[in-house]
Image 1 (cartoon, helix red, strand yellow):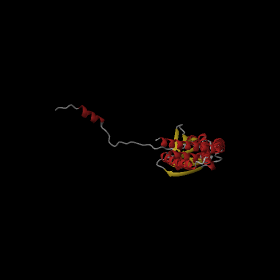
Image 2 (cartoon, rainbow, N blue to C red):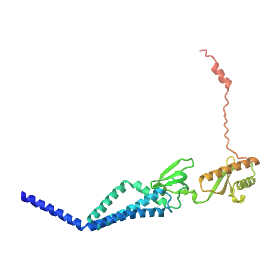
Image 3 (spheres, helix red, strand yellow):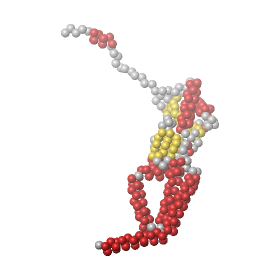
Image 4 (cartoon, rainbow, N blue to C red):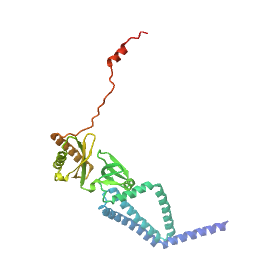
Length: 301
C-alpha cells in the first residue's frame, strides 16, 4: 500500500514538474500571445473608427454604421485570438473552437432566420442610393416619408402623421415607388361639362386657367386636354400637366388648386358641370280619405 502511494506521489510530482518546465519553456510564446491579443484589441478600435468614417459617406443611419463597425471590430479580435492560440501551439483547441462556433452559428441561424433576413435586408437598403431618409415612397400598400432605416425595420411617416413600421425583408422583396427620385410629377384632372357647352371653349379655357395658376406651366400648349367619353349626364374629359414636386403632398395641393381655379372659371363663364339627379316616381296614388273612412267606420257586428 505504501509503495503504491509513493508511486502515485512520484507520478504527480513528475507531472507537476513537467507542467512547470512547459510553462517556463512557453513563457515567451505566452507573452507573445498576450501582445497579439492587446494589439488586436487596439487594432479593432482603430479599424472600427475607420470603418465608421468610411461608411458615413454612404450611410446616414447611425444604427447601421455602429453595427458595421462592431462587426468589423469583432472580426479583428477573433483573428487576434486565433493567432494567439496558434502561437501557444493550441491547434487542437483552435480546431475545437472553430467546430463549436460552426455548430452554435448553425443553431442560431436556424432559430433567427427572420431576424437575420431583416438584418441583411437592412444592410442592402442602407447602401441603395435610390432609397434615402427623407424620400417620399409608396410600398406594400403604404405611402409616406422615410424617417428611419435600421437593421430591423423600415419606418414611414404617412401624410396623416401615422408611423408605419415595415420589416426590411418585405421592403426588399416588394416593388417600391419613390416619388423623390424625380423633380417632376404629372397631375391628372378629370371632369365633365354639360352637353350644351361649347367644347372648344371649354378646352381653351381649361388650358389657360391651368397655365395661369401654375408657374411650372409655361403656356397653355404645355397642358394636355382630351375628351374621353359621352357620359350619362356630361361630356367627360382628362386634363394633364406637369409640376415641379417630389412628394405626394405637393401633388395633392396642386390638384386641389387646379380644381378650385377651374371651378371658378367655369362659374364665371356659365359652364355647367352636371351631376347625377335621381327622381323617385310612385305609380300608385293613395286615396287618403278612403283609408280614413275605412278606419273610422264602426263595426256593427
